[in-house]
Image (cartoon, rainbow, N blue to C red; front, side):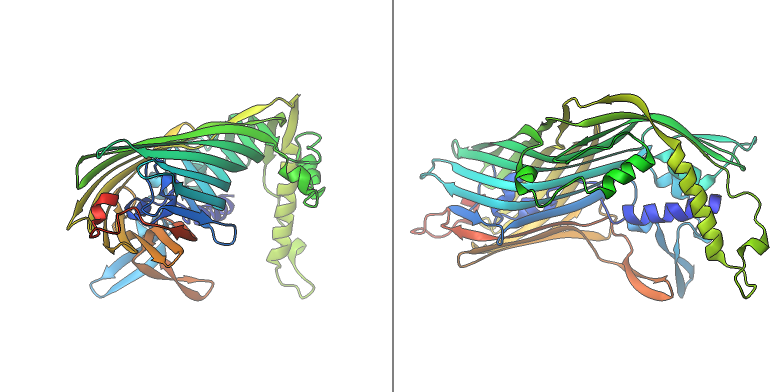
Length: 505
């Protein structure tokens, strides 16, 4: 049984280590003055152009994923054997000398998010009259919480002297939601020192799903694993129907019954939830070449108009497949057939989970409220050589599942011309001494190009997988990417005077 648990654990860990637990915005974009969409970080960040326009085919995209426990080098190490030789191995290998369990937090949160611009428009209203922007974005946000005891069980098994262990899995939860955001923002320079900005977002909820446990215990012994607990499932969206109850068969039948009619465009576009959110921020320049910034973003929630709320009980025991007779698992040639044994084991597991989950009778269709992921962004910038060179320190704090997560980034940028901007950065808390961030901003005639990423890996390990060697980013913390392409016009500086890049900063 312990071997089965470890195989499952490897699959979970491989999925998690492709992610990093950070706020959605790419940190390096703080240094990219060319990026029209920097108001997502702070609504007081005004573009250096007089206006921008993005359309569905010429758009802006941000994608990231994350967990707060593991990076790739938590699973793979390049262990030195002697002065001339080293060996790449999994940290699950006893020869690695790594205690993988020590790397896990009490609860490991893994999260993925994507945002794509459907339409965007921004313009400077009048000379010193402020900057207005209007944006429509599609968003997907999903997360899962994994308790440390889940990994303690998989890695350590039944370690108590009496051969029985109880593992607390209450923190096991998941949530996902998709929504449209329509935002209207405005920023204004008060004087040579202060700029303030804010935006209001109307939220159109598309779909929501979540599961949370009131209690959940795994009681493990060498002979059996028993899972007992109680929790709640919530669903909301443009579904044609909801599950009749909570059981493995009812949920499977609901999914197989195609609860979403993708041909019914009107129903898909009708809001299943309505919400409101705010962004607010400011920048302050105590002297010409220094700028301080602070912003709170995504302060709000979505109220789902109608939902499926159902409590459930879990009570199931897996005690293996009983006695295994060699003669029961041989093929017609008399050779042992491992696939036959695997099918027997899978069938036993299916019988357990199909009977372990049941409804508790408490069902409702009440409206629910789901908050957005609130963020606090702060920064300090200093500029040199008439604003051509910039240095910055940036902090991002994210509130997710009632937990705070912090990221600190340092970076440098160069803008030798008003149409070219290049930046590099390093994450102090999550850089793992081997990753950098990079960003490029260009203006090519009427087109603005934004390319930015955090955690670009610098070292790769040659790792054998299924008899083939692949280069694996050895210290990769994850990927956080921003891509943008749009139309821009005008410049903030006075074209009749020599360009002073610092006046735009």
